Length: 114
Image (cartoon, rainbow, N blue to C red):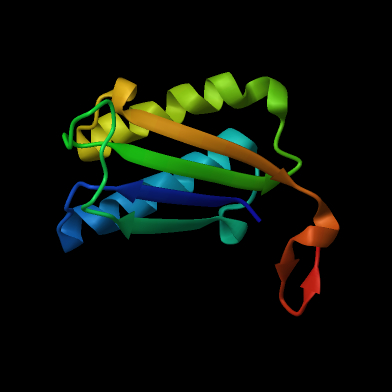
């Protein structure tokens, strides 16, 4: 049910990518209090990104989940920016994050909806 999409202009080798995905999945599960078996993490390499007038490393994240608590997005932003710093060495001021809460009937899985 939770989906974290990481779009960045930073190239990541296979070993680092596996570590990023594994760490991101565990982080999302823990911070949302949801079973990791429902967490999906998507990595998108987009070399044509610019932010603040420069093509220095940057990232755009989308976190979508059923029942995403809006009053905790500040905490989630901190954790996800820390994840980008630790895993990709992207400074927190080079990260945008979009948070979305989905209604159960609008999130499909296993030939049904939640």
